[in-house]
Length: 455
Image (tube, helix red, strand yellow):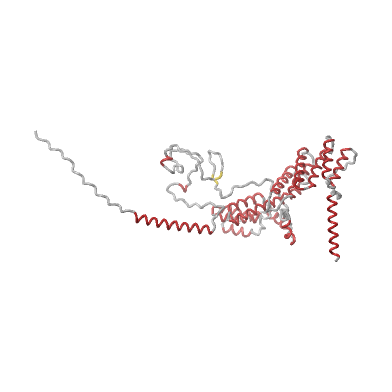
């Protein structure tokens, strides 16, 4: 009978604590106060505002700080007051408060770029988006913004005291972004859109090599290239080579070696630096408790326990890549390019316009005497007359036919073939017999000249 009473008491105490905190009676100490002991009026205003911030009276604190800025424009506490306004918005929280805090921190960096607090302002901006980051299967907008802001801090303030912590935050953010891309890639792979899957996976392993599932991404990428045809065998072998060399402790390492041997490709040695890094990551990886998996579905923030703890994160933004299924052509001397994307559309100039009327294929095969632009590609050796043309494999597509569609297409082809046979037989019966060619008429004898009379 005592347990319900104790539980009720705890609920009442928690409610009272919440009310006291909301009323500003609970103090949250300010991280960077000014300890200078003076009775100057601007210092008094600053101390009063900091006390209001610590007791969650944010509106009053901002009014006091704004009074300090407007009244004492040459005060030595002017920069601290502007930073304190941003901190008040940051502590207030919420979508509106964090947006206002980001704007204030950016203004502080703009007006006081040489102060040590500028690195702190940039760290807060990174933290604003880092705390709002969603799971990998949701909108990655805050993760992308957090990556940009954390990278800017490392590039702009590399010697700051916030740099090591921000570097780890950047690894965590890139783990979430890589997981987001990996989920989309595996969806395309299971759907059968292998070019799209291979393109996504290539971007992951090139941009985020510290991703905890980078070896798995390489394995799926190799399988995608394998299903796309023989022309992608080199890319498949490259994926297996990267698994063996860069991820030697991967569960797919031995299988990748076997694949390379079966393809008669050289098997590389494991990179010692990659081996040491992967060993360190596996030894320092924290596994989830049994109750964490049950509570993850109720959490908004992503799980970053498997994120890398060492290594340099990517310091460039991810850019979209050209899928491997898009044909590449060499550049021409006329355009001055070294390569580009292939296309079946070309532009040519024919000197004799009559060719367009007399020859339907004049655009595809221009006359020898005509001049064509450099955009028209030269004929390949297989297209030269007198040589057998090798059958070209169809390019991989993101929309493969299902078994049902294949059966329907085969059925339609058979019906069309039968219909054509019936029409040919019907036409053969209805066709009249050709008359025999008449013999040529006998030639009449040539007229004889009358004999000449004797004189």
